Every structure is written in C-alpha cells, then in structure tokens.
Image (spheres, one colour):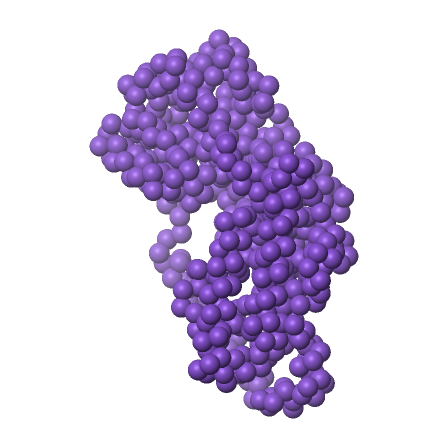
Length: 546
C-alpha cells in the first residue's frame, strides 16, 4: 500500500454506511423498479429467475459465507439437494419477489427511525448493533438471519435482471450493506456504533436526519488481506508515528523503518512561528482563534511571507469554517488588499469544479511570474494528491494544528473504543491524527532531488516536543533548535537566508552522489531478472520431481 498514511481511516470508511431520508426515498423507488422488472421477467423468462437462486447459493459458498456441504458431488451438479436449499438461505428471501418485500420492510423501518429522531421528542441516539437489531426485529417481525444475505442477494438479483445502470441502485445497495453488516457483527464485543442524528448537515436551517453505521475497528477490513497474502508492505512519506499503526491495524510488523531523506543540500527549511511581530503568541486553539490580535498577526505574517517569497505559496487552514471566518476578518482589516499587491489570491472551496479552476489559474499565475497564494484546508482536496513542485510551491504554511472535530459522535465512539480495547489514549490518537494531516499538507512542497521549499508551522503548539516528535523523520532531520519559537520578523530573516542559499547554482557532483547511475540501475534490473528466472526454474524442477 503506497500513500498509506490514512489506511486506518480508509478501512473504517470501507465498513461504514451513512443513510439519510433522500437515500431511503431513492431506495424505495429502486425497489419499485425491481418489482416491475421481476414481474416482466417472470412472464417472459421464468427460467432465468429459477437459475438465479442456484447461482446465488454457489456464489455464497465460494465467498465463504456458507459452509460447503459434505456431499461435494451435490455442489458440482446443477441440481442442489433440498437440504442445502432449505438450510443455506432463508426461505423468505429465496424468491425475488419475497426478497423485494423483505427489503421494503427494512427501508420502512429505517424511515420510521429517522422520523422519530427528527421529531419533537427526538435527539442524538447511539446504539449497539445488537440493540438496533432487536428493535428492528420487534418492529417489523423480520428475522436476523436473512439480513446477513441482503447484500449478496441484491447483487445476484441485479445480475440476473441484467441491470445496466447500477448507479441508480446505489442507495438500495447502501441499505442492503447496512443490513448485512448489522447482522454479521451484532454478536460479541460491539465493534460498530449506530449513531442517529436529527441533523447531519452543516447547512443552517436545513434538517437532514441520518443513520450512521460506524465501524470502530480498522483491523476488521484489513484482516482478510493479512490472511490472504504472505507479504504486505505499507509505505508513505507521512507514516508517522510509525509505532501506532500496528496497534490500529492489529498486526506485528516484521520490519518497521523510518528513513531520512537522501539529499545533497538542505532543501527544506522548517520554521515554527509562535509569535507575531508584536510578540503576541499565535495559535488556532479554540480559546485564541477569535482573538483579533491573533487574526491580525496571522494576516500580517502571510503578507510579509508573500512579499519575501517568489512564485507560489500555499497556506492551509484547519477547517473551512475557520478559513471563512478569518478571511472575513482579513477583508475588514484590508489585509487581503495588501496581500493582492504581492500575489494573486486563490481559495479552495467545497465545490470540486471551482477548486479545479482555481488551481489551474493559480498555476498560470505562477508560470507568468506574477506569483500567487493558494488558501486551502487540511483534509480537503488540495491536501491529498495535489503537488506543488518547483515554482508552484516555494513555501507552504500550516496555520494551526488540524485536529478533528472532537464533538463528532462517531469520533467520540471510536476514541472510547480505542481507549477500552487497545489502550490508545484519546489525546495520543488525536495528536497522531492531527500531525499526520499537517505532515501531509506540508509534504506538497517537495517533489524531487532538485526541488526546495519552506515549511512554516504557524502555531505555538508546534514548539512542544509531544507535537514535534510526531512529525516525519524527513522533516525532523532539518528542524534545528534555531528554527523553533520564532517571531514573524525573525522567521523572515531565515526565509531570506534560505532563498539566497537555494538560489546558488546546483553542484552537479553533489547531486550525482545521491542518485544511482544508469549503469547501476540496469545491473540491478538484470540481477532481479536472473533471480526471478532461477526461482522459476527451481519451482519447475520441484514440480517435475514431485
């Protein structure tokens, strides 16, 4: 896995489902369309529906969801024994029309739960899968066992009906996925939490109740990969602190290594700015972020940096809401007007099209020599996968420490689970997650051996060892004590000194010392090829002997 710094979050998302009222309405329409299609097929090609169930049973056995019968001959034939048919899949979802009626009850139950949450007596609820399942069974008279087969049964039915546009059934697939996960993980230690919220949107004045089936254990999704493959390699430039990943994913690494950057010159200059020019501490802590002195110092800092740094500058904020509020204050203070005298200003928004256009124009401004500053958000689109190499990113500024929204009910449930079962303290995980996001943001600035850039952490909390130690090794190797606890004025002097140093002609001999020559690469490729051929010969010889 490359770029695996967020691998635990990806595993969590893979086994989590969020359903709102719009999704349930779409699922209802999808069920109506399936019902019409089944009726049409039943009158024109009933054999297809009869064969559909047999294919479903065979598919579930291959996936390991059903136990294989002791009579292997029965499975190889096209006629399955009545015992296999009766015991493998519950009868109430065996026929297509029965399965559709079954799913309608599930959808209606979820709608009723959302209406109750959004009602006058509603509110945020958190339940275990077992309690939610019991409430569903009591309210609908459904059995738990068929829910386990809901997702596979739906996929089988869609294949049988030869549905071309599967996107129309995404909401129904989410409901089936919800039902399958709910039934599968209802027993034992609760590794999921079901959160019902009366308002799942951040837009004021709009009510959008949601049901979230949140996975709390990231090891559930990746465990099958560890069992299937003999070697699994997890790598990233921001895989730090590296010792927490084995705890989160529940594995014992054979090799665990954090490497320095091989470079022929100090191409990175990390600076920690903890004070403004007036010596007032700067931070995005909740108690300080509304302080006008902090807001003014951040604005003056950005203006002075953009006046001293050529070409492109990228600035990251901790959230969209904080960026919007501080830009509003900067506009009132005429800071944006001062900033635009030095560089064109571009802003990331939640709209993907707008952000793409802003990025394109940002690059054009850098190419033309005018220079530009791109204001973006940690955990946004720009922080993941957008490179600002060469003159597109001569400096990256991280305003604050990008902690997650700690009042999130899903996050609170996961933090409690990690504390209880893996002894990972809440603050340790929050610091780990925030610093890897900060590292991912600032890592946009360096992309090659000849590239160079400034990394500026604008928050007094980066002076603390417990924060700084969680940064990747390739940043720490350049972070000297003289670069810590700086004021804006002192940082500007470091910036100018660094840019003068990087402006010197590249020493080609020093550059070649950190690069492999072409001949060495070709010889390594030949050795690798010969080793593979030898392994093939040995395998073939052993096969012949056996």
